[in-house]
Amino acid sequence: MNAPTTARPTPRELGIAVGDQPPGTWNAITDVPGVRVGHTTLHDGARLHTGVTAVVPEMLGRGPGQRRALACGLFAGNGYGKLVGATQLAELGELETPVVLTATLSAFRAADALVSHVLELPGYEEVRTLNPVVGETNDGFCSDVRARPIAESHVRAALDGAASGPVAQGCVGAGTGTTALGFKGGIGTSSRVVDVAGSRRTVGAVVQSNFSGTLTVLGVPVPVRGDASRLPAPDDGNSCMIVVATDAPLDARRLDRVARRAVFAMGRVGAGFTHGSGDYALAFSTAHPDDRLVPDGDLDPLFAATMDAVEEALLASVLCATTTVGHRGTSHAVPVDDVLGALRAGGRL
Image (cartoon, rainbow, N blue to C red):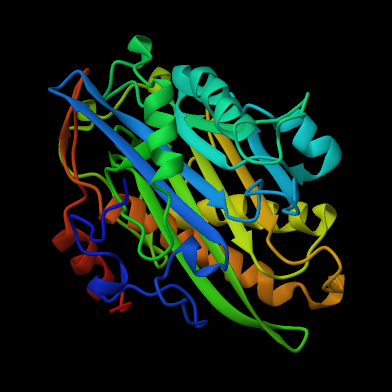
């Protein structure tokens, strides 16, 4: 379930703001009308630290007359991953289900649970085909990924508990056991409100961070200090899932372009983009299908908002996470004083 607060300060609470455009009310993907988020978090001693995060557009399959698909784009920065449903999404440019995020080897059980959930919705009694979308990162450093502990009940709890408003960040849901940029990773979210072709539009992002590189905050590197042997080995997984939502009227082709910028934003925070990294972004629009599409020449504010929101969400996923004693080692929280000291020394605070 969602929690109204986060264990550690968010970037903005620390004085770290990315870009010039304002965030929405919650500075979360839930600022996009009709988008809800839910988490299920599992802890079992040092052995299991994992979970599920669900991004749920309300207009999908809520009853007769509701839409069965939203325009959606996909970009694979590096396709070393198990993004269930990717090929049909890329082919048709349509999102047919909520987006579920979880651990690598639990993605397939999560997909089955997502199908069961959607088929039970009103209006789906005669449906014979459905494309579940489930993303993953490998949390095998902090959690026993081979145990595949995610059950249907955990997926349903995240879907049923999805809510608007503030979104818990850090070591929650699908980010419970992840590690990013040398520190404890997790779930992060952010949003931006921008003027697009004469209309006020919102862009929101949620990320599941689990990738290597050197943490970079507002252009200032914050490397790991001390013994680098504490870091996960490369074969422990090295990926990132990004989900972007907007109420701007965009088709799948334009949303592909938005998704591409979302992955580009990983470079701003120091991503290594290594061989074993599964770096994916999905971008969907909740706008009415009859709305006039934003012309390509007017997309720049959306591109900028996407990159800023994703960058801040990635920073939040690390800064809000707490030290976790895990299955194969300890993933340490980033020392906030180191971050602030580096920013002051670099003239960014």
